[in-house]
Length: 267
Image 1: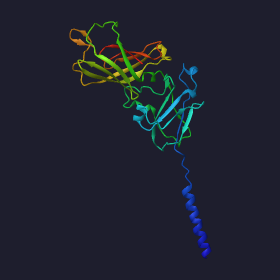
Image 2: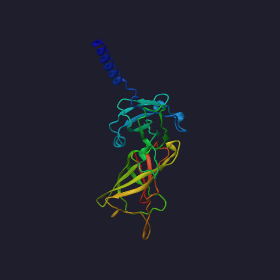
Image 3: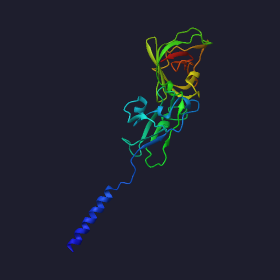
Image 4: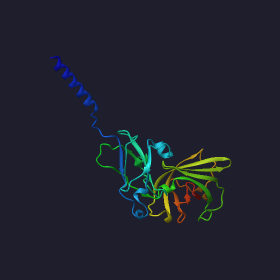
């Protein structure tokens, strides 16, 4: 009788240990796939040319710091990452070629409160299919810091007038753009947000980016506006355009900005 009791206890312990070690849930992962390159550039790149950076937070993604993973896609355009991935957590994924001509960074449009929703993905360990991510061309070429070159004084309709002393233009991954300008010992920051891009195959063809005015700091008081008449000025709150100049390999940009100025910036 005692032997039977002992055997019963051993069996219970074995069952408990077995149940505790039987974790049938899949390992958290990010499994992604890029099906193809956009039409017009497929002959210029291989899927293994695509870099991938994965970030835990929006701030890390925008500032390109503390990546959870960096690497490249395989020949099939796939990647599966498990190290550091948590279940039911969103991650920001950055895909791009070395020249930034091809990427997954693109404007979501003025109707989106957060354009970066387009690059945010949740771990898909329970899915039998990879996350499909599509690429676009000539959007990420706008990102970064651009140095002021000159005003386009030859543009039709512009008469000589006081202008700010500009230094740089910064375009960030959170779809904001900001110019830094000095006038009468006051530093002005003109802030805008990207609303859309034009569609082109090659950056050498010229690429356009459209913006909406957001705010001017410290205020618009004291900023020199271009006069279009004796008592009027021309403002473009929804009509700003940045154009990568053709045949400059993405190194020269003309900015038709909020205050009706045509300005050249370069990298």
